[in-house]
Length: 226
Image 1 (cartoon, rainbow, N blue to C red):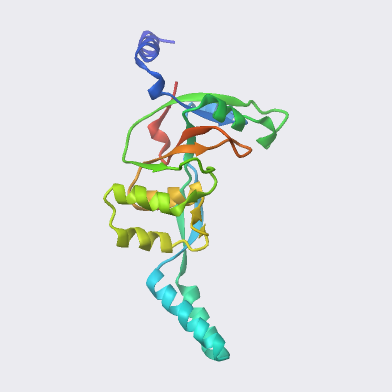
Image 2: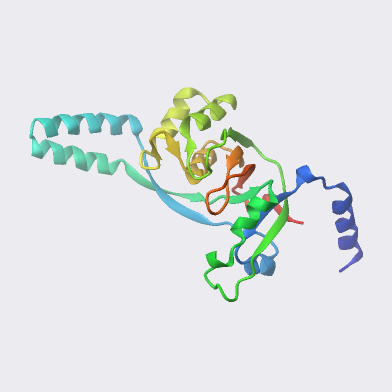
């Protein structure tokens, strides 16, 4: 280790406060240790490209079904199918302010290579960015009230019409007015946010009973392992 690295480590130890530290639990830390950083991961999801037209077609399909007009129904069904598209998004990396919450995710049974896995809780520093703060009011992390997310977006100056449009793009992922963390992350990315903080959420690998703040980050270059 050269002198500059030693100096940097000392500076971090002296000036980093608890507020700067986030925790990430992993069942197998080997990939992170090998590269020294988190890696970007992507996934695909379906969405409705024109929600207004989609709702119009749904109403027309219902009317065609009631009148037993099968030809019209299937014609409308084809039109609705053309509005369903696929998009690629960045999968979020998850961090928590509570080390005990992170440790529940450091379970070797979650690893693909159970016997060779190296479970670990990492401490990281995260560079700032445009952040969406969503109060969860004690709900579980896997399903958050859509109303809470909409309120957070309004507080960030996003117009109501724009919020509703983006929410209506994902009818299969927002049900009974609840949405997954992944869906929150997708919409946040589309609206230009770099980070999502879910405040006062119950979280752990098995469900959770401890309130904490969970942070979702989309760009691994913002995350620095301490």
